[in-house]
Length: 441
Ligand code: ASP
Image 1 (tube, rainbow, N blue to C red):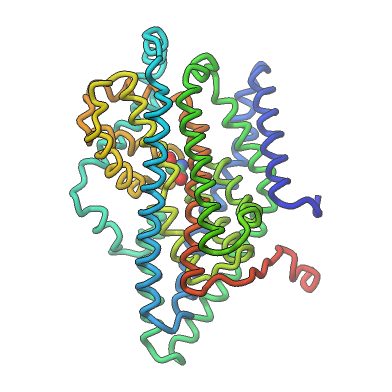
Image 2 (image 1 turned 90 degrees about the vertical axis):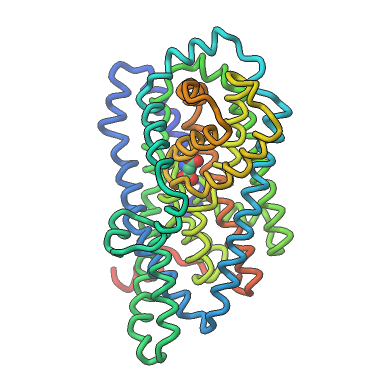
């Protein structure tokens, strides 16, 4: 299999996993077999990716910043990143709202279907869990998100994978390394440089396992689908989300072409392993190490840019999620609260979906939790909330998989744009897992 490019191997794994999942759905005890004997391999893979995410952010950012030699560059990189992230997210929400208001997927849904969905999902543990998580988020004060960036104990931040706190710490260390004499900084810079190389090699090795892991992940997704009738009723809504997400990918390709002068197809080819993993894992955080490896080694973005832009993006830039939140909120209103469909409410959705996507964790179905906050901000009746979530619950997982692809692609695109604007986009130097293998074998 050595000659087959990685993304093809992953695609083959995915397709076989889907077929296997469907077969197991029809076999007696098949679901149990997948849960007990196949799915754990997907979990092991995700655990390994999460294992290296924090050391990778730390090493790559500290080394990158200490290479800058000019502190003012950090300010312009930060400012550009935030402005472009906000810009792309606004575009995503506007695309989403335009589609849902034109297609009106919720307008024709029959009372019968609504009653069926309500009965099946209103008291579902998944829906109740999302509502509980949303109310815990809402209870925090207005500046809590800012306070949360500053850690009081960095080991807690590592242990709880608090990405923004780790980024803050890495920036802090990186800047201080620039502010002390070069000779004194040298040992620590060398240490983080070496750590970065090691973790990048770990990504290469973990990716050897990716085609098998996506097989397990996809089989596990397929066995969770049981009610195809309800899925078909939600096809219009799902179509709107997928069409919006596809337009966003098109928008990124235009940005790549216009701002970095690189070929969009080349970009897609290089980033595709990260996209496929985003699809299989539904988590931009779990995909982050692979996104960083692809962007640094295969696209040619310098460490100081990718080490900052990508982890920040995985946490705060979720274009796919905000596009979905706009569509889902309006769809739910079309079905059960049409009187709320005012122009002002749609403007409020733009603002809250922007903030909600920043606040969403980069884990599966986090977007649905924050959707509750978007709905509450427009005065959506509290007693209708469980029905609202029930309406979209059945198709949430496949849509989550698709929106995570967009979230990851958006981060990669912005990292290229920021790198280009700072003259930090160079010819890539890809490294393979076995570059040095002969010597140590
Ligand atoms: N799963 C998404 C991500 O990790 C977040 C979401 O939309 O639920 O990017």
